[in-house]
Image 1 (spheres, rainbow, N blue to C red):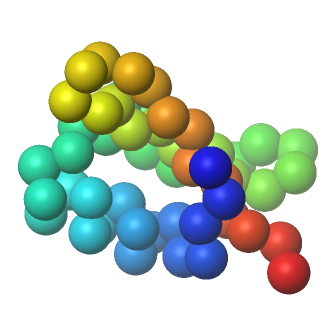
Image 2: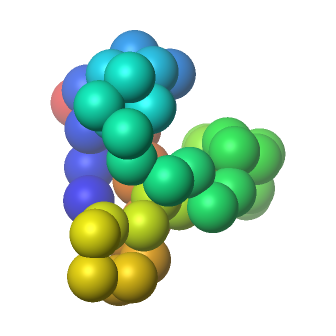
Length: 50
């Protein structure tokens, strides 16, 4: 899922109780992080490139 502000989005999701399964890491095309929804589904978050 693309987000406008990766750090801000993660902070907001953490404050709402979301499980962050992987903090942002640098990859070849930018950054990547993973969260987990209440059903245990992992969701990848990447910064939107606009």
